Image (cartoon, rainbow, N blue to C red; front, top):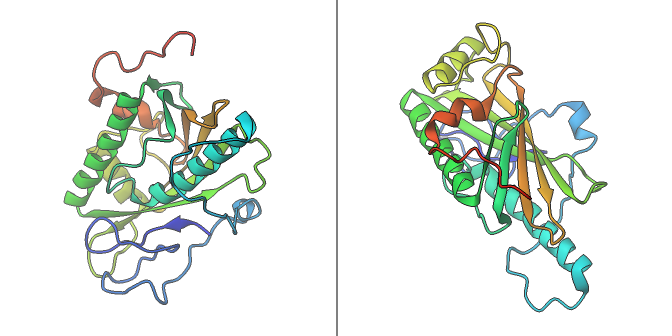
Length: 248
């Protein structure tokens, strides 16, 4: 199922594959598994084989082998880092220096420095949410089980929001909307984000170059459907970071 972390009294609590709204003192044993949507389970990679996270040196199998090894390394690294994205910086060695980050609404930033800054902003927002009494649990799963398009890696992620405390009660739609508004996010249409039950959910598509390095990351938020994530964060970025390099 999802790879993620359950909530605790702080922002996150480590666990291998479950996320539960149970008390903060309860450990991973006995936690209820997440209920994934049936349409997603059909394409979920249940038996993903991790590839050791190490630099590739002395390759003798040519460009194709280099691509396959780097692709496996990228997937392994993403699955390892996602549950901790709101807690610590991910491994950026799998990305090109000219990496582009964009959302479905068309907003984009370019360059590894701006991309790293994006995750710094996410961690700061998570700290602010924690100060508002909200804790988060991040989960991720592979969407393309058989890697039918090896030039892309598609991941489905879910951020479950809970009230801090012993019961770790999930946020209601109203509570989630209130928190998002305080963090600076506004619905792209209407006065509310719609239903969702305290969940932020979406898809990230990573495009690979000929060597298997990630050169672009596209985010599509599927819940709530009226949320434009990067546009809301634009004010935090330095001037000039939204320009895409020519010839990329």
